[in-house]
Length: 413
Ligand SMILES: *Cc1c(COP(=O)(O)O)cnc(C)c1O
Image 1 (tube, rainbow, N blue to C red):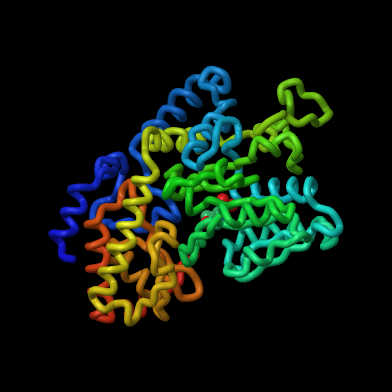
Image 2 (image 1 turned 135 degrees about the vertical axis):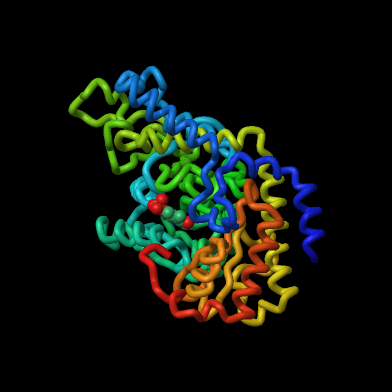
């Protein structure tokens, strides 16, 4: 591979035109879209309109006039095709953490018994997912909620008749390893368990088939590959078959049958709207609403294909330059078995990451000693990959990462 081959890949890229939809800073190669997606230009425009016109001039009438009140559902319906869901099953609200709490509690109340009280997850799942399950165990007591975290490779065989809920993340945040959700769902159902899938690192990066896989419930966030902005609200998917059987525990007024009747008695709405709790964050939700327009008419197979080519190119270049002596790939060797990221183990991962940021290559560090590169097919080019590896090569060959200033730890890593 040389730079000309890489330029040919870019000139044949069917997604190349999307790059211009994003505001990307000069002299920066952004390989962290799996943590915070880049800013779509149309979001800037929309936020300006929502603050200046809607909030500024139209004030409270905007709830009706600009349909603020239906934004959670409208955004949910835009997310639905991206995750393989038909209408009426997705809604945008709160964070993944809060949504997991709602779904896990609802699933346990519906499906749990004294002999079926286990929540199974993998030890290597994203910590907030684990913390929520631990908190729920504390709240409900072990008799009703026994949280069990197993090795990722043992997930499938750990599901048995004592499992109430399987809670898994499709793409591992650290290694990028992708789980087989279809098989896990089948196994869960064979044993009478429900499954909740976290799509944080899947939604927008690859096709997902929640309906076809027969998944019961899912959550995901909108600030990673969906580019909704920092702290943009997350989403909830509840399969039609379950919706009116579940009762989520945060019985707030936005999930009430008729919030503006101000009835003192809680009565849940039917359908997916029951999963709302309080007033939606309109500015943020408007931002994600605009960002999702980029997914209209977008073929996620094409997105996935580019993602696979991007990660393969990156890893091939690392090997081509012999950098794999020091950077040991944690992610699976086969691109098919990983998400849109690559992680490498290196004793000086933190320092390397800082040295790269200093040179305009933005990646991230994940404790204890991993450096992680995320590839966003809508705005990363093959040339980005080439240039990033050139910088890594430079920093590694000159030992530049050993400069003491790169060892200083920042609050957010
Ligand atoms: C990013 C991420 C989260 C974030 O959760 P929030 O509560 O929305 O902050 C949760 N789970 C996984 C797997 C993630 O990657």
